Length: 306
Image (cartoon, rainbow, N blue to C red; front, side, top):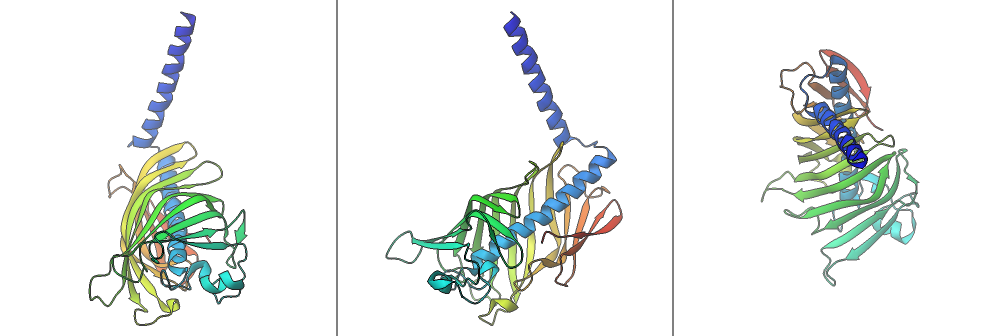
C-alpha cells in the first residue's frame, strides 16, 4: 500500500508538471513581462536561425562549380590550401576537410559532399564551427529541379548546436531570366549551451534579382519571402511561435547579414493586433549587423549574430 501511495503521489506530481508546462505553452494570459520576454526571445531566435541557415545556404552553394555556384560562404576566397583546397576553393582554412563520395558511380550525381570542421575551426570572419555538414546533391544546383539536402552530425556554430534537415530546390521556372531557389527547414533545432532552444519548420523562396547575367557570385543579390513556425524554450518559458516575412528580405552574397526587409514574429496564439507582436526590421540595405526590434510600440536597435 505504501509503494502504491508513493507511486500515486509521483504520478500526480509529474502530471502537475506536465499541466503547468502546457499552460505555459498555450496560455493566452501571460504577464506583460512574460509577453515581452516571449516576443524578444522568439525574435532573437528568428534572427539566429536566419544567420545559421543563411550560412548553410552560402556553404552549400559555395562548394564549387561542379555541384553549385562555387565561391561563397567558407569557399569564398581564392584557393591556397593544397590539392583539396584547389578543388573546393579553400583559403587558409586548413581545419576544414572536404570529401566527395559518388553515390552511383560512375555517374557524377547523386554526390555526397562532407564538410568536416573537426573539433574547432574558426574562419576569417570569426565564426567557429565543429562537427560535420553532410550535403547530397541530386544534380548541379544551377539546373531547375536539382536539389541539395543537408544534414548535420554533431554540428555546432558559435556554440549553437544545429540539428534537422535543410533542403534547397532549384525552383526556377522554365525559360525564366531570374534564378529561384526554394529552401525548407525540416525539424530544425538550434540549442544553446544553457539548454534554451529554438525548434522550427519553415520555407523560403529565394529569387535572384541581381547578378543573373554573370558567373561571379559576388554581385548576386537575392529577394527572400516565406514563413516559419515552431517552439521556443527560454528559461522557464516554453511557447509556440510563428514568423512571416512581410517585406522581402534582401540577401547579398557579398554580405554575411540580411541587409533589408521586415519579419513579423509572434506567439502562435496571439492575434495579429496584439501589442506583443514583434517587428524585426533589418534596415534599408546597408551591410551591417544592426537591426531594429519593435515590441509594444517601443523600438530599439539590436545586434544581429556575427
